[in-house]
Amino acid sequence: MHQPDLFEPLLAAYRNVQVQEAGISNVELYKALDLVGGERKPVGRAQQPHNLEHRKVRWHQQTLRKLGLLERVPGQRGIWRLTALAQREADLTPAPEGVSLVAFSTDLGVAIWTRTETLAGRLTDQISAIITSPPYALRHARAYGNPTQAEYVDFVCHALEPLLKNLVAGGSVALNISNDIFMPKSPARSMYVERLTLALHDRLGLHLMDRLCWSNPSKPPGPTYWASIRRQQLNVAYEPVLWFCNDPVRCLADNRRVLQPHSERHAKLLATGGETRNKTYGDGAYKLRPGSFSNATAGKIPKNVITITHASREVEKTRKRAKAMGLPLHGALMPVKLARLLVEFLTPPGGLVLDPFAGWMSTALACEEAGRPWIAMEMHAEYTAGGALRLSDRPGFHASFDLEGWDPTRHSD
Image (cartoon, rainbow, N blue to C red):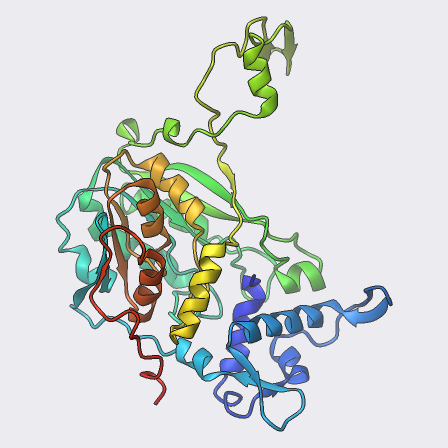
């Protein structure tokens, strides 16, 4: 899988206008990524010295090749360039201002090709939760574009404000955002997360319920420069999910909807009638008495550190179909398992879920699996088509375009 802090700069280097046709050598690429020099360490059985950062770059090159995004320039040794497919990724089709068109629908939901600000004022449905992953505040913009650190707070508040009038009392807003944003040329992390948290309370009247921690075991090492070269940071392993509610006292969240199986050890404890010990821990803060944990429960309450890998066979299958159709591959998908946990925890059965930055429709797919009605808004036509691939087997699926007849050459001229 891709390492976000290196993958996007790598694509940006190849997308440079001056190198798109002629290509670029690895030596030039290392310079563009500020990876000149660096420590060499013995690698493999032969223990030959190699620059580990350069090896990571070459690993990502192979990933790009497998995705059909990178190719060797014919007749030139060691020179690489983006394929026509990769260049089309930057040629997305945004919805015109004022336009809202149904891209596809199922028995449970509808995906709309539109700008968030276009549809927000027209919604009449009552929403139980807004669950989304807005574009990250990356220094190197993805193909679909993203706000900078300075713009981010206004961007998110502007998108959410008109939607909150439809949020029912006790409704939630859950935002999966990036933790890997740094100050320019500094190992210090940006405080945009803190500024956003305060703004959502002060400007929009939302109340912070929790900062859920999504721990991703398959997240590759990074930030490359500050952790692997300068050694001033630890490798990043999580992203925050900010959870807000408009009325905490009437909050619709219920952890009984997401209980997890008891561990084998705890199940045995319950079966034998609970604790037999009489002990005190933590200077009296915790006490065990005979009979503790003797009442059978439906499961254990999940912790707010959520461990879910972003790797998925379903996503890889969809990527292959999208590639075959000439569709651009979305590089930032929220795991469906994470989205489903949020959907089931935050919304009661029948509660409507809205995703205003739907991308490849992870939240919509999670709602389908959880049996919740949903509305998804996506600005780029190609991403709604990619999302349609993921939901095409759902009951009542109907696309407003010829999904199988998608023309992969229509952006090539």
